[in-house]
Amino acid sequence: MKLKALNGFKDILPADVALWMRVEATVRDIVSRFQFSEIRLPILEKTELFARSIGEATDIVEKEMYSFVDKGVTMRPEATAQIIRAYIEHGLYVQRPIQRIFTIGPMFRHERPQKGRLRQFHQVSAEVIGADHPRVDAEVMAMSAMIFSELGISVSLEMNSLGCRECRPAYKEKLLAFLSERIDHLCDDCKRRSSTNPLRVLDCKKPGCREQVADAPSIVENLCAGCDEHFGAVRSSLEQLGVDYQVNKFMVRGLDYYCRTTFEFITGDLGAQSAVCAGGRYDGLVEQLGGPKKIGGIGFGLGLERLVLLLQQKEQDQGRPNELDLFIAGLGEEAVRLCYGLVNELRVTGLRVGLDHEGRSLKSQMKQADKAGSNYVLIVGDDELAKGTGVLRNMGNQEQINIALDAAAIQQQLAGA
Ligand code: ATP
Ligand code: MG
Image 1 (cartoon, protein in one colour):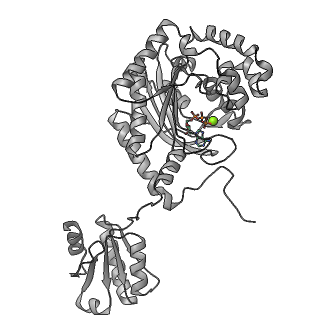
Image 2 (tube, helix red, strand yellow):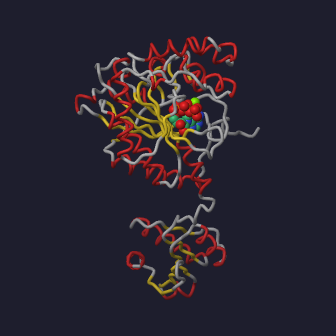
Image 3 (cartoon, rainbow, N blue to C red):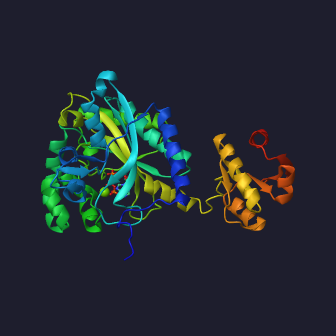
């Protein structure tokens, strides 16, 4: 029997890791410009944490969670709830009233695997906790936009407001009245959603439902004064920062804890998996999870698989790898034996060095060096060995010099070049 990885669980192979690392390095660089600090969190949490925060009547909690039912624990499907859990548990608000925190890691959701949709996927989750100001909402979106633009990826930002505990109930009523007139024309899921979570009917992807809700009342036209002002200020802040966006009244996001600002960064290049980053404000969440009152927050989850796919699609030519600073081509057993020690000394100095142990020809070893994108090759045959020198070839300009088989001399030559 051939053993294979589980469906929806994917190995990230060495050839792809360089790209992942570039993406992660860009993310870390940019979030640090916005004063975010990293937090590292466990994979398992009490199921209750997600049920209470994300909401019982959501896709994630209803059908996507990997839960150990007998143990009451779940593999995290997203990180916001657990970041808030940690924020409360460790009293991070005592040290600093406003926390800017991010984490990068795997999330787990049992959904149908397809391109850009996995059961184990990776997210950057970035949160500003303790800040209510609309400028922060725009700043968080600007940060995400900066990640995309530095990676050379074009996406569009869609934004909406979901109102708050004050104005949403009245809007829900209005929407419900609108939906009940059309209930017979909605899909079965939406018939059910109408009573449990009517806002979610607005983002049903089925064409029949889309048609029915085209003229549905818009939440942004039904906001209370506070939410309306907040929404306006988010918009003008985005404009001040030069972040392009569109208001999408159908974007409600699946999670219960969102209020006011919600947003998604969308691409047209990944088929149905169009959202690369999604987030919003969650002003009641800290209190709901047992933390202090009146601590707002806003954040996003950015899907790394989708980001990497976009980069792979864009960069057909993945470029030459550069795995090594130096490849030592030893010819003959005696040369290889001596080079073996030299390689280790050079590695101690910090150089990335490769060596072949299979007794291959010079031609074959040069090929290996080229494949690894080595900057230099040091050729050591019997003649060289007798003289205690090797031939150092610069793979960029093909220049060759003789050099002593001495770690310090080699290191100096490579550093000076
Ligand atoms: P979708 O509508 O695609 O299911 P979502 O609304 O469930 O996304 P969020 O929970 O907001 O997504 O997660 C934020 C981001 O994480 C998404 O925009 C997407 O890039 C990524 N993501 C979510 N689920 C998956 C998955 N199963 N596989 C890969 N990436 C995912
Ligand atoms: Mg989903």
